[in-house]
Length: 407
Image (tube, rainbow, N blue to C red):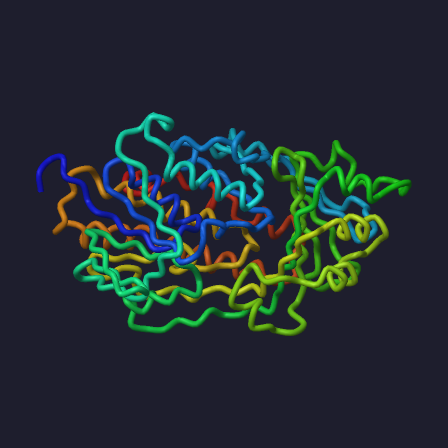
């Protein structure tokens, strides 16, 4: 391979892991992303919080909080079902870990990752060519040894590296691992809505504004409203899109398992049912009722895999290590996975690729398995503060693949 020849990178899936990997790799290699969905694949209006471990990486890639509408989350408050303050914690994550946690509307965040993967290089101040993203292009088979993928129309594409980032229900994982892991139900369901702050204010009308919705308490804050019983029922809320929207994640024990809620995190939910379960008081009922789109997700995770790589192919993101949002680390782990492709240095030879992927596997797979273990430990009846503050140093202290190699 001559000095200026680049590796041909194939990425399957345009989710958070796939697009971040595309941004990392586009500077020195030729990147093509195959996405089975349409260009409107990221239409979800729910929230996603990216912690310091993820933000430290994104901040090196040209991420714009302004464009993404990211809101720094600098405190946590917990309230009982009637709105009385139970616990309060203030964070200085920038000083402690080198970055803040930011809340985003999921579709806004996807748009920003798509920009980072595909914008003209001059706009980002980097070398190389933008990644090519091919929508409605379904990969049905992967040859991990040769690096050849087959699409549903019978056509093929050849690469030096194949990255599988096609989610927890990956149909291609079996090309890498001999076992067939099944997603494991946790017994918990998350109903997710995003509401306009101004519409919520109007819906409250003449009602006294609850403590948790007062502007000085809700802005830049992640707050919990716990259920009236001692079950795992609570509402988690935080601001999005420059404080103009709020995510409300309504968590409870699963009542009835549905096929659509286990096969997708984007299944529709019944708003009346959610208001019935989580409308602990009139103010919360009115605010929840503002929602126009409601999604439900039966929480599942994936047991650790024996390997992530075979030949010149590797699995990352939820396809490799799906975990529940109880520690808000699923997206962060995907960003960490993608950043590890920095080890595919410029002028990496095709014949060296399997060894580099094995090195990434040795670094990333143990950390993901430990992250899953710690997340599972928080599935029980912990308080909001106990759950949220459980593993700050382990998760947020991560500073990228080279910090691991230097340790």
